[in-house]
Amino acid sequence: MAGAQTGTGKTAGFTLPLLQNLMASPKPKSRLPRALVLVPTRELAAQVAESVRTYGAHLPLRCTQIFGGVGMQKQINQLRRGVEIVVATPGRLLDHAERGTIDLSKIEILVLDEADRMLDMGFVHDIKRVLAMVPARRQNLLFSATIAKDVKVLADKLLNQPRLVEVARRNSTAEGVVQMGYRVDAKRKAELLEHLIKDGDWSQVLVFTRTKHLANKLAEALNRGGITASAIHGNKSQGARTRALAGFKDSTVRVLVATEIAARGLDIDGLPYVVNFELPHVASDYIHRIGRTGRAGAIGRAVSLVCVDEDKLLRDVEKLLGKSLDLKVLPGFEPDPRIRAEPIKNGGRTGGRSGGRRPNHRHGGGGQNRRSNGSRSNARGSGSRSTGHRSRARV
Image 1 (tube, rainbow, N blue to C red):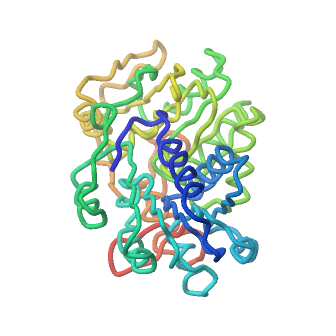
Image 2: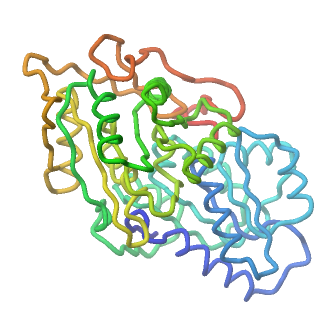
């Protein structure tokens, strides 16, 4: 069980020895998968699979990625040809298992990546189903940037007397991330963000919102203001998500507006800015969000836009960090002292209830929709389904 700050190389930490161990052990006659990496989101599956292929470019080991939102036939064809390593989201992996298109009986190494996010998205039931399909004798590895009590409880159930390896203080942020923020009214957040981007000539900005609805509205507002922006969230098709991310990486898209789904698995070289347009409901998600910048020893900047409604969320973040955030007031964007805080509805995350608030004029980006965007959807590839436990994203 390993814990380390985001951007410090956890993927390489399990991929390199995994490749070495597979090469060192006798090659079996079967062409069945020998290693399985479980991840919570499509983006992280693609990122990890890319890393495996990069590190193993000169090795005779094949890797495939399995996730929802795309057709199954290509994945089936790759599995039939034979692969040693599978990187998968639990939902689509179980789809293949139910169809009989994957056999996990020869798995030697099982990796649970971003274990805390797995718990948050309600994947525990699915993970247990997967465990019933793999050999009892195997090596288990559990990785996370934040190791909370519930992660330890999960580890006790899934792992056999695991060794704990931590390379930094728990729930700490990378040293290369400069954190600061601005006090501003909710209805002026979009205006302030546009000002900061234009005035500071920010070239590449990853912006986080709590809801899919606001992500769309904010991207539209930025485009109207002359700033190229795209939104990425669970209601977008996999093709749209891939195109948006590709545009952001090649700088044809200046701003990527994302929900929590993008807090894990996005590895963008030299990303200079992360903006919390809204603070997250869960404080540990703040660490994962800002961990998209300041990676691999680089310097990055994390900016939070905080309205009066978010004071409790701010206190939760500061308690987790063990320090106060440096919040400023920008001239011309002073908060109205007459505005009183309103409660923020704490809904589920991407793939569950939207966590939106009742719409009114106070909210930037055109307000938020109280109705869930995809709550309990049964559509394959997105939304969520009931498992008899917590609802979880169908990724």
